Image (cartoon, rainbow over the protein chains, first blue to last red):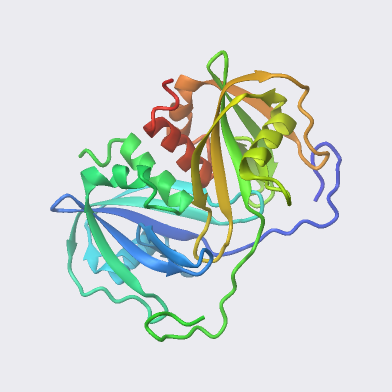
Length: 157
Length: 157
């Protein structure tokens, strides 16, 4: 890698991994749909928005819809993009695409992969930010997406 | 890896990398000190809070103080922890530790590593959230830390 100032770094490793999509889904009853699952990187459970890798041939929105359905059994007809961010731009190519889904309703039993153990957690939307402020969400990118939704007034609709 | 439900994943890769520290520094003149630099993972420039890897033997706070000084030339005597988050808990061990520094002042010429090309950017603290809302910060974890500082009233002090 050569910087614009001419400095060369002989060996610099960039990690390519699939992009992922995630959804802040608000139910007809003003609950937000979250998932709690074991995360091996931190060797602990993590409370997050439903999320998952974008499969080949899927758009980010299609992936977010599928992950919401698979991980929670919820569906929604009213989707809006929230934000797309880099998860670790110094060394990772990964982009995370967040959406908001409104008027979500439980339509299926949730059917996570066998490799996923997912606990469905719903919280009143007016308590979501408080939950973040007290540190219950440890995934920094999800913290950003949730507070961005709040700043944009999407939790007050 | 074996999940609590008994399902075994024969091969699961976790990426260990150093933790990092970062600082939202507010100057005596109510400016926030940011840095813009080329990020190879996304092959683009990224506007971020000053941040860097925690060296062996350093505490997160010591690393944040050093990075602020090296990347921007600013120092501060008034530090508070802001938040510690996981950057990608599914596969990464990395924790990012954010601090707020108040009453910061320029004390040195900034002296980034030769491998870093860093542009110092200061913005009025009352414009920081607007800058995030319009998408000028693409690093999702930094978005989270900045909006958390706003939610906690730290930008209004």
